[in-house]
Image (cartoon, rainbow, N blue to C red; front, side, top):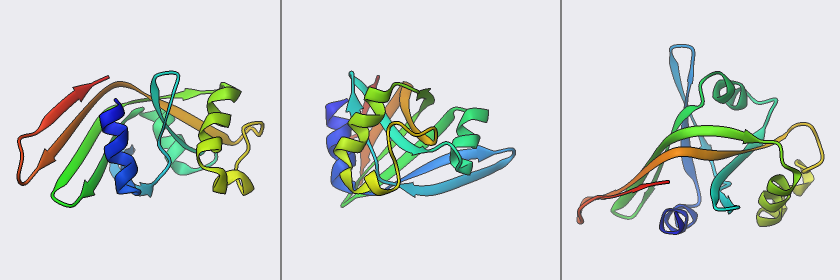
Length: 130
C-alpha cells in the first residue's frame, strides 16, 4: 500500500470514476492518505460524487506520471470517525477553510477490496491487493 501511496502523491492529481445511473462520471481529486493502515480519500457528503458512491461504492481511480500509470479499483466505505477526518485534514491543512472534522458534511472514505495496478510503456505491470 505504501508503494501505491508514494506513486499517487507524486502524481498530485488523480481522476475518480463513479457511476451515475447508467452514465460514467469522472472528476479530478487530490486528497489521498493512509490512516489506521487503510487508504482514504476525502470529499463532501453534499456533492454528487458522494451520492454516487453511496448508491454504488465500486469506483476506479487513474493517475499518470511520466511513462507510468496506476489504476485502482475498489469499493469505498464511509468512515464517520472524527479521528480519520482530522488525520486527513491534518495532511491537507489548506482544506481547513472549507472542511472540518466536526461538521456533518466532511466525508472520508477508505478503500475496501482494492486492486492497484501500476503499468508502464517501459516496464512490466505490478499488481497489489489490499
